[in-house]
Every structure is written in C-alpha cells, then in structure tokens.
Image (cartoon, rainbow, N blue to C red; front, side, top):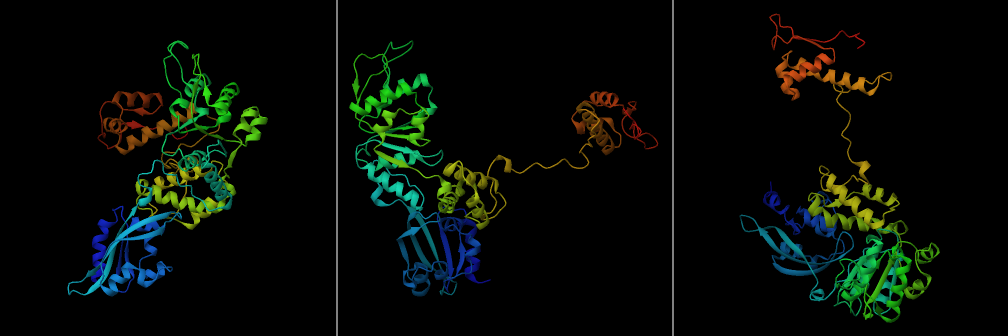
Length: 473
C-alpha cells in the first residue's frame, strides 16, 4: 500500500466524524480521501470522488487556483484561504480553508491535505435582522422575491397569500429585514391559533376590570410599536374584529379592552392568507374594505408543484442541512429518489418536502452515503411483517374471534410444552405464567395434563396430552 493511501485510511477514521470538510490527494492530484462533511457540502457520494483528479471533479477550476495542486506541485502551504463556493443546494458558501503538503518518510511530497470551514460573511455581522434565505431559481418564485424586496423599502402594508407550507412567514421576515425597521422587533401571530374570545385582547391589550381577572396588559400592537407585526391567516380572524384592524391601519389608533381612551401605535403591518384574497372576500372571511386597505404590496407565493425545477435544489439543501444530525453517513441524494420527488404533486409544498427528507434520513439507517429510499408518509414505514408460519393461526371462516383466539392460544401452549419436553414448570417460566395458570388454561382449552409430576415420565413421554387432530372442540 502506498504511504498516502495508508495515511488516508488511518486518518479517515477520525476525519469522517468531523463537521469540517477534509480532503486528501496523492502526488498526482488524485483524490484518495473525501470525508463526509466535504461530500455533504458538494452533495455527492464520497466514493464517486475517490480516484478522480481535482480538475475532473471541479472542471471550472484552474490548476493555478487549486491550493491542493499547488501544494503537491510547488510544496506551498496555505492558511485561511477564502473562496466563494456554491453548495449542494445552490447556496452561496463562504469557504475558508487551509492546505499543506504531506511528505513521506524519505521527505518527498506524497500528497496534500485540505481542511476547511464555512464562515458567515463579515458584512452580515452585527446587523439587527438577517434576511432568511428563500431557496429557488424558478422565474415564478424569483419574480415574487423581487416584489417583496421592492415593497420592503417602503412603509406601506404588505399582503402575502399562498398555500400552506409555501413559506409565508419567511417572506414576511425577508420584508422586515430589508425594511427601515429591521433594527426593531417583528412580532408574529397566527390568527387561526388563537380562540376568537382571546384574539382581541391579544392584539389590543386589556385594562384592569375589563372582565373578571383582567389586568393591565399590553397587546401586540403596543409591543410591536416602531417595528413590524405579522398576522398570518388573517382570513381566520372574526369579521367584527377586522373592522378594528382597519382603524389601526387608517390612523394608528386602537382601544384596549376596557379602556376609555384610545392609544396610538406606529406599526408596519404584514398580513398573510392561505387562499387568494378575492376568494376570501367572496367567502365572507375577509372584509372587502380591509382587503382594499391591505392591497398595496401584494405577494403571491407559487406552490411547489408550479415550480418543479426547484424540488431537486430544495431536496439537496435539506439533505445538507439535516443529515449531520439525523444520519451523518448520508452525504447526497440519489437520482431515483430525486425522480420520485419530482413526480410528487406536493400538496403540503416546501414544508412537506422538508419533512419527507427528514423522515427518510431518520429511517435510512443502512443505505450508505446516498439517500436512495424515500418515506412519503406514515404508511411507508416498514411493516413488521407477518407472523412466523409456526405462530400464524389458520383462519376458519365458520369460527368467530373467540374460537380463533382459543385455538391460537392452544397452539402457543402446546409449542412451549413440546419445547420443554412436557415440563410444566419450565413451560410456565418460558410463557411468564404461574404454573397453576398454565394448568388452568390447558384444562380450559381441553388439553389434557398429568400434574402429578413435572418433566418426563419413566418412558420419556410428556405429562401433557394434546387432543386428537379431529377434535371438534
């Protein structure tokens, strides 16, 4: 075995458990080691990289720009070398790595090793709010991302609508992060999650004595003063309460429960619906005047089935995100699995896709480094399988449940007695039953027993006697 292969095999046992990407090449620039973290960052099977040249794996790379090749060719050493890197899901990664030559026992260069890390870009440090990344390249999605970025710069309300699981809150957070209010709080409320009799006090607050047990308590409009308030599923808010929301939008004033004087607030409102706004108006779930007040910056998030080209991108991203915790040996997703994902219609949108990947990672314990099998729902969980043939009772259509259970119980008892050569005590211990209970059950089932002694009779025959085969008990 070459020294470099021996070194890679020895160190690989340690490097495979690191979260940092580690790669090793031989003196010719051919990969001899590629750890899981590196393969996961690239979304590949590490076995598919071994034996291939650096420039074959990264055809866009020039030899003079490869730190590994410069290590083996020039003996140079690199520390904290920065590279803007595209990850498995198309995300921009800020990759910092160090590389140095590896020498053999005779002092000659036998290869090179590179160890890297992913860093947060310096320009995002210290900012009040970081815009969440929304993954996708389909024109239908990017058009809405451009729209939300445009609307974010102003102070006008934003109305977002999309099916469940499309990421409405992510869009709202993106708008807040790009707004002049990014350094102030953004509060969120799902209107469908709050009982109707509590939603008014949650939004506007209460004063002492407003109702039994009421105390002076600020509502979300007071707590979010100066910042942003996101109301999800606003079409689940009672119609009567929507008129009070309309007043806040008009002049910034509201009246807490039990209060005599109105309060004022400076809040940027972002609202979301899980159906088209005009459909909500027709269904009587959204006031028409409130719709026209909110209908300034409108964002319509396309469902995942209408941007199928993003499915593979999202799947690779979720594998890279969740595999380190759920199944560290997985570094990529197979083509057959991607084809299955592309064929699915995704009624639950991105959230459903995310959960499919997480469930599949948890259940894929023996699939190796490539996620090949998917579990779309609980029905796809592995079945415990049928009972062994020796235990499976034969069903008779003329018998009821009681008779079938009795025959199955008798089968188990006879099997235990036969296994222990008729020894009642030993059979009872195996069945985790008291000996007297075993005798009682044998008697009830018509299985004759000789309880005078345990074990074998002088002739070696057992002390229990099965009924004749033709018995019609």
